[in-house]
Structure formats: C-alpha cells, structure tokens
Amino acid sequence: MKFENGFRVILVLTLFLPSIVLFPIDGYVVFDSTSYSMHQRDYWPTLGWQNSTPAEQGMDASTLQAMIDHIVDEDLDVHSVIVIRNGYIVLEEYPNPFQGQSRTTSFDGTHYLYSTTKSFTSCMIGIAIDKGFLDNTSQTVLSLFPDMTFDNVDERKERITIDDLLTMRSGLPWDETSAPFSSPDNDVWQVNFNSSGGVQFVLDQLMESEPGEYFHYNTGASHVLSGIVHETTNMSMLEFAAENLFAPLGIDRYFWPSDTQGVTFGGFDLQLRPLDMAKFGFLFLNNGSWDGEQIVSSDWVHNTTTTVTTLNSISGYSRQWWTMPDYGVYHTAGLYGQYIFVAPELDIVAVFTSGYGANDIDENPQMVRDYILPAVIGYTLPNSLGALNTLQSIVIVATSIIAITLVVQYVRKKR
Image 1 (cartoon, rainbow, N blue to C red):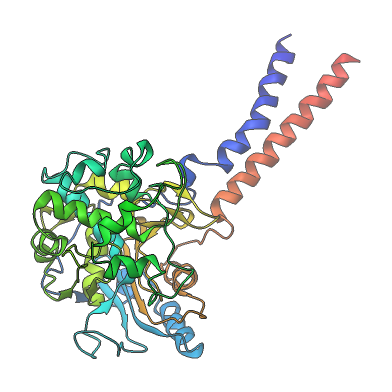
Image 2: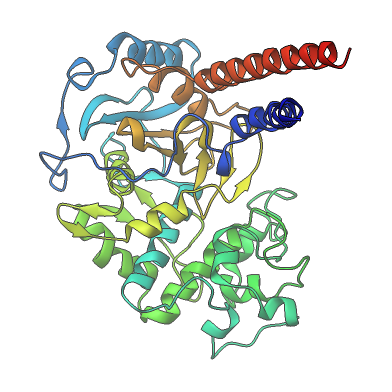
C-alpha cells in the first residue's frame, strides 16, 4: 500500500512538475523585468550624462561595435543609438543624424517619439494619482469629464475605467491603418484636426466590445488619458509634465503640441533629445526615484511595466509600455523605430531613434537581443529560454526516469 501511494505521488509530480517549471507565474522566465532596482548611484545625470568605457561597466566593446557595424553594413536608418550601464554612457552613436522636423539638424536636436509618447502619458497619470488629482485607475472615464456630453453612451461606455485606457482594453473602436495618416478616414487625423477635439472624437464612438475584455491598440485611448490629466489638474499635460517630470530630470528642451481644444497629444508627437529619452528610462530603472526625490511611485513603475497582455512568444503589453518578459526587458515603442529599452536586472537603458520607412523591417528590438544584452559580461541569452530550458530538461528527464523505474518495480511486484 505504501509503495502504491508513493507511486501515485511520483506520478503526479511527473505530470505536473515540468509544467510548473515550463510555465512560470506571469510569464517571467529568465529575469523578472519589473524587479525593483536597488542599484546604488554615485551621481545623477540631471545636468548631463557621464561617460565610461564598456569594459569599465562590464560590457564587451566588440559586441557593441558589431551592432554599429551591422547598422552601417545593412544601411539601417538609425539616427541614434545610446547604451547606458550603471548610469554611465558606454555607447553613443549617431549613424544617420536626424535631418527632419526637429528644433535643429544636429544630433543634439529633438526627435519625434511617435508612440513612445504613450509611456510618458502613462507616467503623468501616475504622477497625477500620487499628487491627489486622481484617486486611482478604477475611476470611470466619463465621470472625469462632467462638463462634456458624448454620443452613443451605453452601460459599457459608462464602465470604461482609466485602467482600461492604459491597458488598451477600452472596448472603443480605433483604426489608424486602413487610410493614410493624411486622410480624415484615419482616426489619428481626427485626433489631430477634429474641430471638437480628440477626446470628443474618441469618446463619441460606438462601443465595439465590453471594456476590459479585449486588447485593441488604440492611440485615441492614450489621448483621452491626456484629457484626463488636463481636466483634473487644470493644466495641459505639457504644463504638468514640464513642472513635475521634465524639470526634476533636467530636461529643458522639448516640443509637445496639442489638439484643436488645447489637449496635449497623449499618443504621439512628443519630441525630445535622445539623451533626454534616456533620462526617462533611467527614472524607471530607478523605480521612479531621481536624486533623492520620488518623481512617480515605485508601485506605478512596477504596475505599468508588468505584462498584462501576452501578445506572442516574445512580446507583451502592460500599461502604455511594451514588455519582453523572457529577456527581462520592458520598453516604449514608436513608429519608424523610436525606443527606450530598460533592463533592470542588468542596469541598462538603451535608446534608439530611427527613420525606418513603411516597407522597412524595424530591427531595433532584435539588436537589443542580439547585441546589447549579450555584450554584458557573463550574460547568457535565453537561447530558446536558455537556462530555463536546461532546468526543464533536467526535471523532465529526472522525473521520467523515476516514473519509469517505479512503473517497472510496480509491475514486477504485482507479478
């Protein structure tokens, strides 16, 4: 009887233990991308970044150079690439300096961030909550615009919360791909130029699903978040960010336009210098703290960079941030290749600005996986989830051997 009970226990472990190892909680495998960073800083880059060598910061210079060679050899339209480790610049290159609509044509000019703007908008919601302008993300959206009336209001629309907007699960329709951005048939055009304003346009739409039910990427939802900041703080989001985010970080050069009603664009059009983009990533790397001041709560940093929706085997989405959980990385993402990558466990921030065209393949995330992370001395890439796969294999083989042995012994005993 004892033998049979033991056999059953081992059989259960054989069936379920590999699954426990194969499918960690929340999808995190090698690193927890939202682990609270406890790195000590010997300076803060408020007045400017300090430089170091890759070797001094535990990185291989040849691997980083191989990335630059790849950009040049493949003629990738990367305007800037910056890698910061332990708070020091170890790589700063401008392969194709930005010549577009910036405040200047030099590499020190501001660059369009496109949808990387969304992560800044999310941060401003967090700061608004920290400062008491908002209660929490469970507040319903329509209740925050008491002086506005909207079309097509039903029970579902009345249930939309701030968190539904943050997670791209509002249930509202959105289409920014069927028509060019220059066309009124594109919803981004409507946010830009609709005479009633972007917030009115977005919240007037017929609901397409229950809020919180489906992920549907929606730039309009991000713009409504800006409208919420505007409505509750009595400041435009640009003004609110200038006072509560940009000034403490020493960011004094920015451009962030508004819609026809004066609401700062929440989903696009922020312009910053690449080195100032890195400051924003560094703020999150340090759990919202900057030189002794808590700019945004550490809980907000954690909650907005933890995967909410798994999109594929590599990527997930949180609250206006994207995640690469198997690699311990979270990041912003903007059209044509604008990124801020944060790897808390490795103490890395990486920034890319680019001008990839519609027919180009955006290689920047792949370069993080292929060059920047492997440049860390002693780092082992997942390699199809690397170390975890090794552990999985050991567990599976060991439990299988035990199970087979017990089955053989059980059969012999029955004979």
